[in-house]
Length: 134
Image 1 (spheres, rainbow, N blue to C red):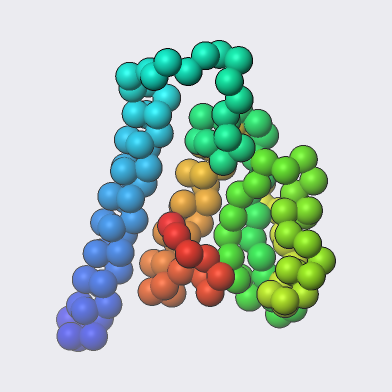
Image 2: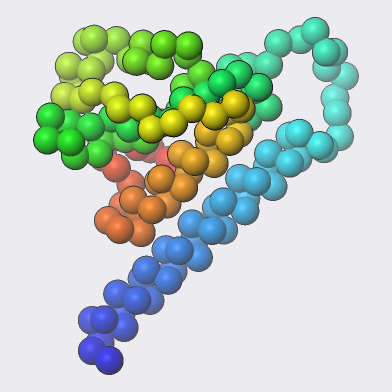
């Protein structure tokens, strides 16, 4: 096997292992949040909108440039997902939103978003340009 092919395979294998480790960490954190020890919170206290415990429908989206190059993956629980960003923000980023799916809970959407980031990272060696985290 050529050294470049072996090296590429090692890099890809390492990225896959890293991505799956992060997925496991995400699930463990979510499980701790959902099933761990409870604090003294009462049932009538509202969850923060970005909490993985949120049961609100959550959209998975990607921002793309005019040539359909992926700039960012994200999630939003906004009932009108395109209003996640203002017209000014879309113009500044040179982007438009494409909806990829909707999930019944934020945790399910976050897992999908993470998977999209992991796949992009494996294929490109980096995150999309406007993404800041897996």
